[in-house]
Image 1 (cartoon, rainbow, N blue to C red):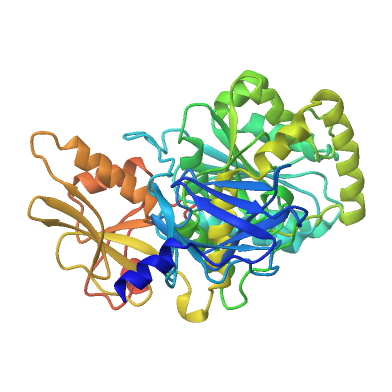
Image 2 (cartoon, helix red, strand yellow):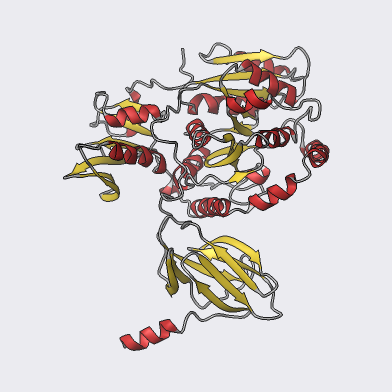
Length: 524
């Protein structure tokens, strides 16, 4: 029986036309189409659409895998005739990264693992909060959305930050009365243009008012969620040459996830904050790169502004192209532009202008971009479908498709040592010593481990530094402060440290009495 099974496996997978052959060398999956057959095939990975591509002149399609999208070395793929088309193999194909050959498939795990190998972590020891961040929100109309935007910023921002809100002479009197409510909040400045300057000039004013701070440009029709500012900050500091970082959205053109250029529905069984937390925990830190950012939620490092200045308000007075031009100018000075796939920002889009005017402004802006940067569209096309971007979309697609009320993400907090609390409203991860091993544990399973060496402790500190980022820890909870290594590393990463009573019945109850020292905008 064993020899029969071995012979069957050697025969390879049963394929269906137009797929004539398949080969896996450990890094590249090669699909061979039959002569004269349709040439566009899609690939499903662990049950969710991953990618599609056209065959070359010889009928070959190569899908390269620089790293495992699932975070696990073994994963299953299923070829299809186009996305959601006819299945082209009798069963999924089991691949193992770094090992040639195709094995029998098995049911995939319920969710992907962390992207350890592909994570672009902040370099060890970087003080993430050393530079203040100024959040600039130009306002023109749509008071309900403005209120939603500002309330979310105040509720979800941690670390050194200020909020600059600029009324661009909004004709709606409700805007002035609304903004007056925020004017006395600590860290908030409400400014008003004497007459309408347009979005671009107003954004430039905000960046100038920010002085030497980094800047986040945030549309007034956007809504941020938990960990948004920490996510943008870390992506911006992941390498010295990062110039801008853009969040992802349910509705922001090329920055929409999981489907580009579409308005994506978020799970009805989750709140927006829960959906944002799902991406924080599941999307990973393999930041895709593009030749541009998007001003709906754009983090700009001060180093870029110091070199190239602000936006071109003369060429793009109402926006729609100003950030693309800005990013191209920055690229000429060696700066790169990343997508923070773990930061989800809801975007109403067109709230100030309406869809018809937005389309007209976009057309006019693109004409200027084509004249100034003739290679821009080609560069976007070459990078828009990068492997990192396909991995991001796949991980988001799988996470949202599996959403149920029972699987709603909970805050992920870290407890060091014994006596870790168990709370229904939080994932309590535990950092513990087990002999010479430091172990990161969740629900009894060892997620990561490192051997402690007393004579060379930095390796263990660096391992913890990376774990805090890769595994999306939101807070360190401690019974009392004692300047431990974990507390120091969390402070450098701008992760809140909360003193709590482990006997509390829930995280919510425990935090009710905790000092919130690093909230950006505490109530007076």
